[in-house]
Length: 65
Image (cartoon, rainbow, N blue to C red; front, side, top):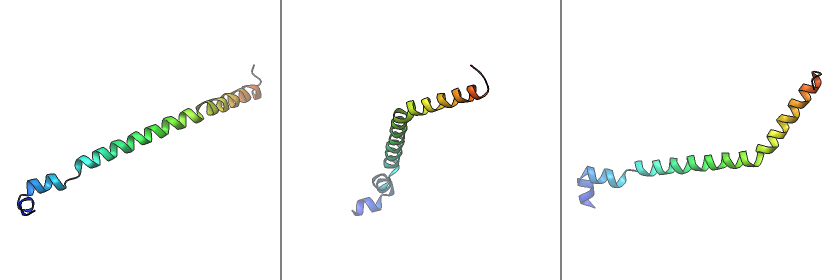
């Protein structure tokens, strides 16, 4: 243990968490992407149908075909 404390380069490499934070951010970004894709998959057709219905009603209200 004294060797590690006496050599700051070794202590910095062993105690540093730069690699860990990069992995954590990558996992977090991947999880966010998966949740977004799942939400689009689940609500995509419902939202599309709702927008199409609204557009049809607007066109009909304006006296269009």
